[in-house]
Length: 391
Image (cartoon, rainbow, N blue to C red; front, side, top):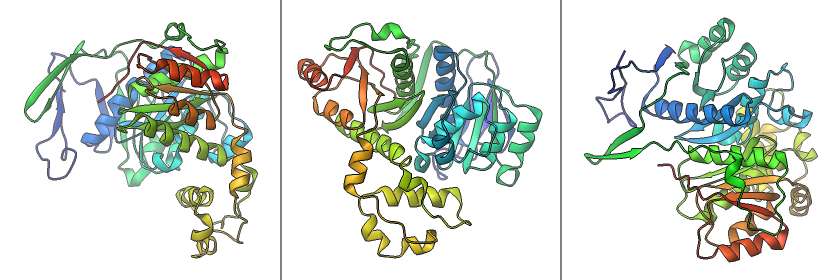
């Protein structure tokens, strides 16, 4: 099959939409279930490239949770502690490495991952399918599915869940094109390989990158390669914990991603873990309520009775001082940026969220200021020389 008609394009008024391939080969993707749309396929093909590169770079199963052509989370299948299992709602499952990768990817930013498109680097197993069946998700792309996994996924969304199978041997043409306003753009595909060789140039006083930080920086850079620019990615223990995508200002990327990393860490605070939720609440309601509870305006919102709707009893607020103390315990975070940092304010913000290792292209006229700010906090930074814009 060389083309697949779609219901509509980005919006219902954009009719006559399809995906097709110009070469002599067939489309490398098969629809096993559902009726995926234009945006679904954009998410699918971008996310598949991301997990494929993560698997190749780390040797570990990889997963990503995509929304609107950017990852909400990305991770590899490293073991999780009991706290992470609890806040990701998977403490009742016997986790496989692939399922662990998706739990991490989904859990990085559960608010943004709501209604995601999922990509898996490996054949979807039963455990991963069970996990997905419990979440609000639009679809999945993977190189294959076990029989039981496929059966489970086909029951999701009243049988309409979008399930795509990708040919893992497919290699696209080196040249890619797209049209905007009737004008065709053409460029060579971004096939730059992200490896530890990119971290060789270390201009900071601290030049020590432990193996875990190198792994995490590679994960950050590969994630950024498929994130709408400008973008910044915070990574810890093999998973993205904060992604700032599509911002016009670099500092806004850093703040957005840093705020998400802070929320990820605050979700692990004992007060949050012990919130007295009503037993009939679904995961999305719990996630939204936690987000409000952690926010600075919880006192005002609680006055409107949110605790009566979601809690069995009114919990005490997580105070500003308690948050500050808890956030001070976040360490060992790695940060990647898809382009150079123009000012040291990005480093100041990153430091507040436990960043100790940075990889960015370098090349700003204020590189000296950025390096000096890293040295102020003992942060190790590498200049990769590789920009990773994605549009």
